[in-house]
Image 1 (tube, rainbow, N blue to C red):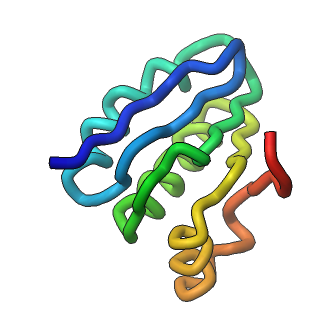
Image 2 (cartoon, rainbow, N blue to C red; image 1 turned 180 degrees about the vertical axis):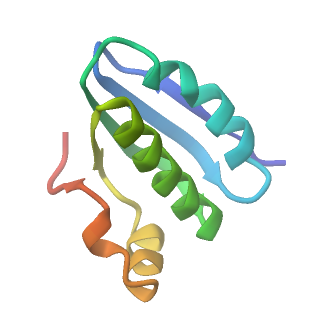
Length: 104
């Protein structure tokens, strides 16, 4: 069995760990809502701890982008896993993902 979880990394930083797949993204979306409800206008999500991801993981990132936009939050992703980068490229969505290049 696989799982995924969010690790708070400071005022405007989150880490995601585990597997982003069809079984984990809905609970992870539910868990993440509180971070988008805070007062911070910026949020950085570090995906370095993601061990595996499929199209459901890409859908989660897009949902987070929509939620951030609705709440006026500037959202950026760091350490985008290669699997998600490939899926985004195939779906012609690379330009939509605000990815910070380089490590922490």
